[in-house]
Image (cartoon, rainbow, N blue to C red; front, side, top):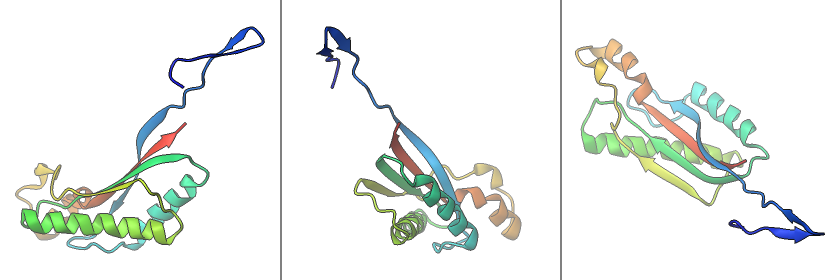
Length: 140
């Protein structure tokens, strides 16, 4: 550990250091004003579950977001419900990790370029904002 080396038959052994990388592995998108997973979101999570098999995972971060429509308090609650829905789905399909952080970030990072659009066009434009990002710290 650290920078210590061990001697083995007169030859110094170099310590093996495992790298850790924090990587966003998936984003799951939600329908307007919804916190339930849609079919496409389940497909994304199923692919993620297959990818996670046999990986050494240090930590999991699940961050929910909302679009800019609605009040700050409503969007904070909605984004947290979205993150909880993803965590619940992963847990129900066998992926449980003790070191899981769950965040509801509301309309943080919402795309401002959608201003001025109405109804369906506005909802379509803001699709990227209605998401949950799953990030993992994986030992390599």
